[in-house]
Picture 1 (cartoon, rainbow, N blue to C red):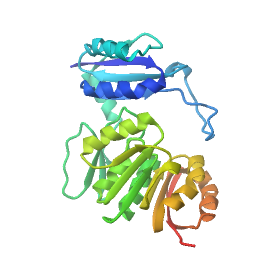
Picture 2: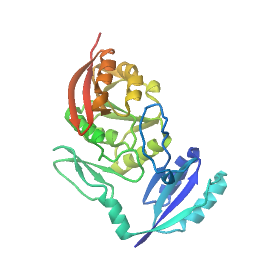
Picture 3: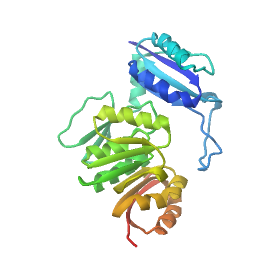
Picture 4: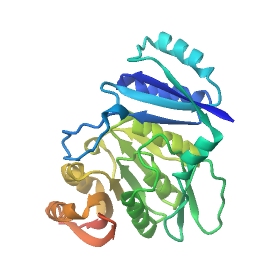
Length: 296
């Protein structure tokens, strides 16, 4: 069978609505291509092939069984008065190429309790909680060491009484796992509208009830027994006090996204806010930790 990968180059502010339109019209998968900022505030280092990224805006690529979607999208763009930044690009994708794409996304056994599978895999288990994630929309599929570490700790520390906050939800994989592992209530937040849209797609795919909100940690209301975050160091540091304020007494914070070389910097910060280290685990060059809020 032949599939069509159709690329639309537009301003980032219009991407979320276009992705939503795609999935209302039988989109098989979607990805957003955006050039990272090599001078961003988090000090990340990128090695880029500039030809892979748009100089301005973002490219939204949707995969469909028919190219007829182009007519519908053009009507949508005209209705919304959205101007493309370059011509629409279409490429044919064969079954073999789709299978090659799918080979990059394997079933991931986190532990005896939890398994992450791609959305196209049909699998049931009496012994493990199964979380389905739609790859191709970015924001985390469970294969990165930092995500696996976070899921490992989540599976170990979650309880059925927990009220959970997933700070920087991305694909929603941590929030969905928390709910399917038995958490009482789960809230997921992110400041990126595209990430939150992706999370909602995966929440629906897993048929769970999660409150997804577009906001920063500073704007969060309520109190939580467990907070989990898989984000970069500087954001964690900036939000440490907010997490402390939102955690209940003796609440748990599972932290991931940290390089081994960054561990001491983070530990210094969290110790200033009366967090006690409970556990620290490693994989490759990454580490994740569990800390508990100590009442002053």
